[in-house]
Length: 255
Image (cartoon, rainbow, N blue to C red; front, top):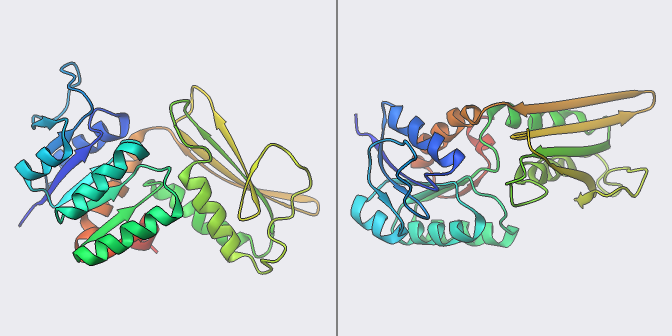
């Protein structure tokens, strides 16, 4: 069996280091290298070479896939470099503008390879979004609250933005959008209020709250450990081998 060769950008980060361990343990994958901002000897990771230069890493190791868990500024260079070199990107970094994703899709199609942009790799989070789109045609008064650790750069989160987009697309009457009843301090995405919380003690959590006359329905997903993302990361690595262009959301490989 030919193994899928993988490099991980952001290998010293919390998501990147967990990805390195999971890829190294997967029987059908081979972890070739990690890309890091600076070398840190105290971090225990699989025994593979670590690079600070993305191009040097990809030239030396020739992976099939580059998994990126960095930040938007660094990821932009990583993605473009990987596409230029014919290497499929798995993008777990968020904070991109919609037009950037359109551009990545065009570049990937020109290169005749596939890529994946996934704001959330947790299977439960994807099910939360799926179930929410089934509810919103019947309960269109809806708001989103997302909770993350203080180190998360973007707010609202990529998961919240995608949830709002999917809710809007699933509404029966899109002219009304969401029926909010107060100005609040939310950011509105497709007319749906999204509240962002950044506090210690959280990893990644989201509530989708539906209100009706005399009733309330809440769908909530809680991430207690970053291990919860790993089955989705490995699924993305395996599934992206047979597609062209950018797949926007891991759910396309599930539902």
